[in-house]
Length: 157
Image 1 (cartoon, rainbow, N blue to C red):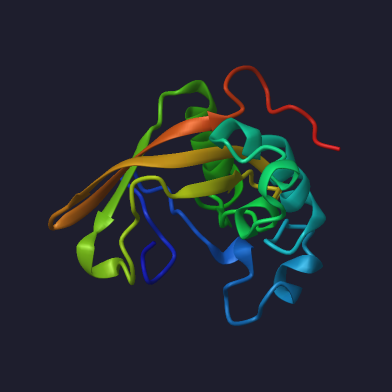
Image 2 (cartoon, one colour):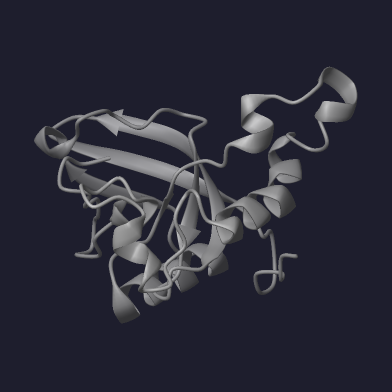
């Protein structure tokens, strides 16, 4: 993730501000109705999606684990219509990578990293997994859509 929260290859910002990691914390987004990592909407989406990465009902086998309870980070690809357009591209398979200058990263993404993509309204809509990272003058992160695998995002309980 870039230091400024942006990450893109076509002018669409990738912001992690919806995770509550901004200096204002989750309270900053609570009034706007945007899902944060502590939000029940993120937890419900993670419960529905985690089986697609092999984290099904693990507690019946090995007991509760942090991956079982803690959802991956969430973000949106920009704000407003930019976020929705980029999300639509992720869902239809036409967008599977982002890039940004190397100096804008605190920490490089790693192959296997998971993330929940939010729409412009802050609702969780997709789970993606990093499949490849190229570290050069620009960092290119390729990812795959893990959930949903086809059709519109299913409702979560």
